[in-house]
Length: 138
Image 1 (cartoon, rainbow, N blue to C red):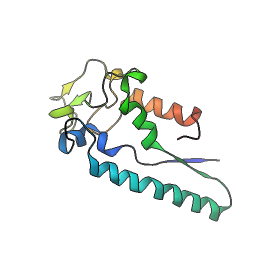
Image 2: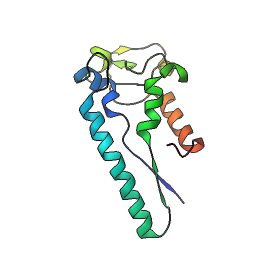
Image 3: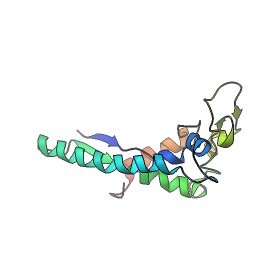
């Protein structure tokens, strides 16, 4: 048996952070740095745990790099944008939560983010398929 443990994704690139902290559509620095500090420590902790258990029960998944691929080049994955959420308000639809009064896209499959925080079902499917069929890169 194996347990996959995903690190943090690119926190500074989600629409909520683009709206609150990003400059000119660029990922927000502080959340990106937090994820960059957290992820290597998580990998180190998992390696230590596996060593203590005497087996590789836990497998670290590099969600930061994986998600960065389709955030930096959304069109390569069939998305039109990685900056604007399908559902939300304000800049990048990144303010508040998705409600009946929110802006709503007509086709969520062409957006990376469903709301200011979460990937769409299609983006999550790409993430999961990459985990199961991907290389050691992630």
